[in-house]
Image (cartoon, rainbow, N blue to C red; front, side, top):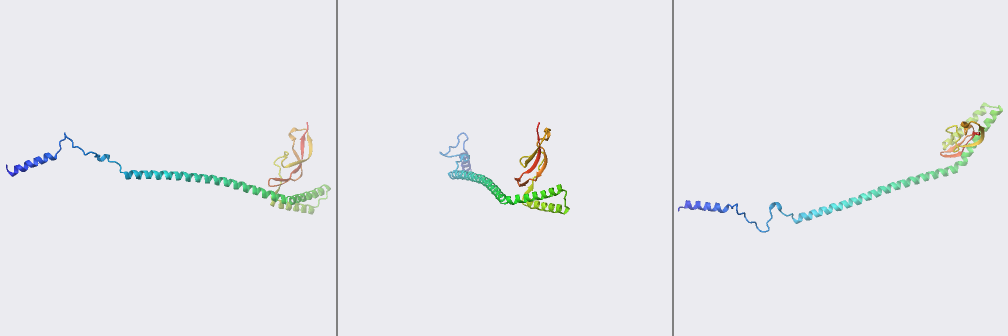
Length: 212
């Protein structure tokens, strides 16, 4: 047999040895794992646990911070309400002290207006109405009213013709047999004055009273 035939036989044998028979699968080594089922490295598992632990800690810190903010907002609202009440009470106390100190002065000025009105009415009833005297009395009365007004003292103006016990005082009663005229104001005797919401002197009036 020549060299050519020997080479050919060798190639055929080599090709037969290198091609496995599909009827007999190649045995795998013990403990071998397929590539698509490779286990997760231990380092990656530890890293995942660290990330989860960090996220849990952040969540707890955020919850604590949220509670602190909520408590602070509630505290600020309570503090603001307390300060508002305190300021209101201090303002009311200040007004009360101011009124207590200045009430005698206000009453004296109100009485001065009454005296000027009485002089004017007396002169008018006597028929001795002096135009110059009337002008002086009106000017003085307006000036005193302006002084009181600048200090918060105003004339009481009744909203209707019915008697209002909150701002009026009855000094005379006229009987009437008409029920519709009961408690109707007939005449104003003296002006009333108030300092803001405090009545310094009620308006003195004459009213009708129903008597069947």
